[in-house]
Length: 301
Image: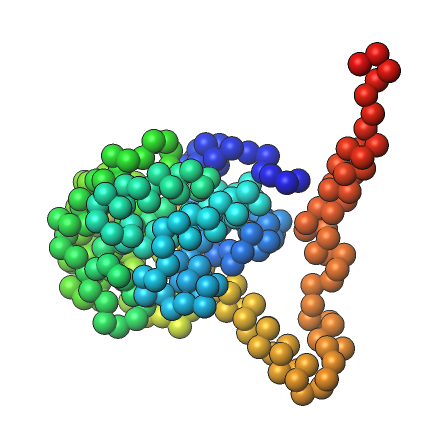
């Protein structure tokens, strides 16, 4: 109630320990703090904050228009609401290596368990769109090094994302990933791999935790959790899935109300009031409020 039961340090350690098991960690993307609570309640062990979702939430495309302070504020609202470790998309670090260093510290302060930085040119584009560009490998390595040097909690996970597959080819993307690990990255996010053979090749070449992005309508095939675990991947990411589901339901609902003049036919599709109150733990708030309201000092105080 009002806050999490765990500290950011505990959640960072939990994420590290979970990754060390070698078992696949399924990581749904939260669309707001309430959905993060639902991710936890459903039994998932971690949550994600997508840059594309954070931008869309502001009514903006995912082309580098959001600022680090905007995402840090949104992140802090989410980490207050869940005891799950939360990984965030930090785009390119929002500028030069010094900006990446500041980004790390702001996101540490926001209670996150980790972030990923990418090697795109700033401002970036969605990783599954055409027309993106990447910086030189050494430029990204300096970005990663600055992030590592700025990190204060050694358990804060620093992941490097490479978008080079679509631009320079698979071997170049693997070479970049190895360089980013040498610069201090704890894990690698190879964006927009085309097929299982490419996932396998990356796993054979890179000996740190790997993230597989299972975004819909993108460049690659959607692989099952079993397949990804068999391929040796550590994280299966579903970054925009639940925004797309929610917005699809909102569109359908708006059309129905417009056409029928009532929401009556939509009731079976809705989360009930009682379920929402259960998720928000209304009962605990009511008990706390009553205890405070009825509190009196003892006579000899």
